[in-house]
Image (cartoon, rainbow, N blue to C red):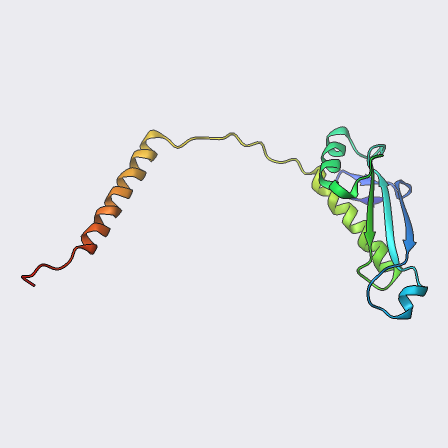
Length: 141
């Protein structure tokens, strides 16, 4: 069981991890060792997620989501299989936690008439101060 939030967790058998060869620098070791982890999670058919979380998760996943609703995460930041496996699982957990977070409902408000009037008066006052500063000294000075 992989904990995501206090009330949400996913089963270990819901994810599958396979190891593939990682590209990039590393010499001959790159060609011999399959150290990159590829995690697959069927978000569309997961019994752990409710409809709201599933919908938000599919939106958040973006290009990591296949047409069948499977999230594919490839982790190859580290040189060991174990570190890449942990990295892939951690990235999935972060993604699900973000989807589970309910954004706060915001009621848009408008400034009051008094606030608008005060703002205009302050602008006028500031404009007069600037105008007074830009006046050239008279010939009497």
